[in-house]
Image 1 (tube, rainbow, N blue to C red):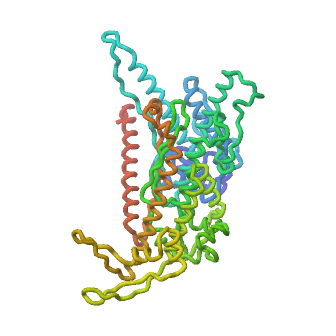
Image 2 (cartoon, helix red, strand yellow; image 1 turned 90 degrees about the vertical axis):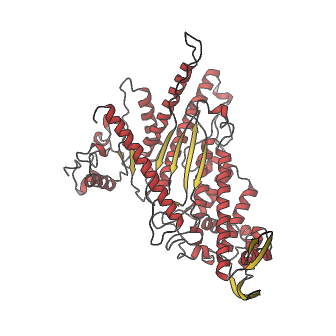
Image 3 (tube, helix red, strand yellow; image 1 turned 120 degrees about the vertical axis):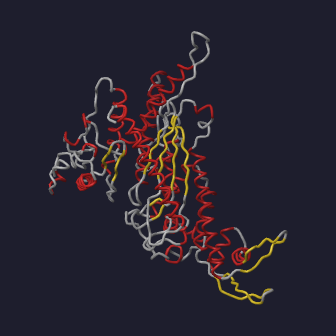
Length: 554
């Protein structure tokens, strides 16, 4: 193919040359849509999912596990390359690692980037943001120290404009593009960098104090919670033996938020049904100090009306799969399964996930993560009780009746006294009569007087749906708040500690979707996507234009 600079033959997959011609699409001879799509297709066919175009990283979802891309060895290569770019830039040094994009790790010089650099990767994007943040911090320290020096004339301190150090990473794309996984990859890389700094600081302290290895003063041991961190490669800080580190807590927030905020859709088995912005704060040495998560636009309508062929939120399936006999007895689940709840079987009862993930195992991982974050047993039980109450509320039924009033007979209804109705009231902590009255009557305030009037069957069903959505939304907000209490590191977030710190914001935005019938929530989601994309394009192109002007091109 003369456009992409490669042979467009079936043997491309096994060819040692750079697939697609370039790692950066800007290097194509003609930068237009056909050439871009053709280069991306060739790279995707060769299991190369990352391609850059200037400062933008293009990632194409492979819809399969590619563990060789995210091993500790690959992560270490990008860390060393990032440090080499920061330390050895003056000496002209360059890293010459093996490309991590091929599972067989072929050594091919053509597969390397310019001057032996590693190919595009989410690790490289994260590392670029991290190094830019550290450079900004160093510049800030230099400028502040210069401003604090007295002048010869007046001895007053000079004011200086501190260079910005905060960075941001926008993870955007349509639904099913892999945004949630990419966000976790970036967080994992930041945690690894922070852990590296902690180890270096511990080694320096150990060397300066000349502590014998036999003394064990800085001996690292594995925390009991390390068993739940999966393949995060994050262990305890040597200076906090047996304690859960902030890196672990940040990473362990993912299984909790995914259980309550992710669901299987037609395009993705683990699709985030909410947007989140993660503000990660680092110290002047580059060590992770804390984080804060902001969420928005939780898709509450999915709770009541999941689309055909899709599932409700993961937590329902996970709990029904892994609930113990005692929990089933306490929450009225004996003999009940997924097909017995209308919230779970209304969309065709999609029980399994296509990605091979077991719901029972994910429930255990969620519980372990809650313990790591700091949820006590009573809080966990209360959350599971509310989740089960919502399932029972979905099975509540009403019978249409008529009731006499001042105008004669009006439509009314009565809540049926079923097993689900009884359990819903019990789990919500109210009497059955109070629950029935709250759902079948509405209150109208007229001056200082409150009048209660009955509602018909349809209105009662809508009231029950509103109760479920409000309860689930409150549960989700409580979980986010609890997670933030754990990972924010309140001591590090004090005004005094803000000096010499910077943050990297990671925005995992909702995927753009269009359905046959789009509700108000979907309009808000798509509008947010469009606004963010326009802001992103304006900012990136403005930077490119400024660079062209500096080089005299424009």
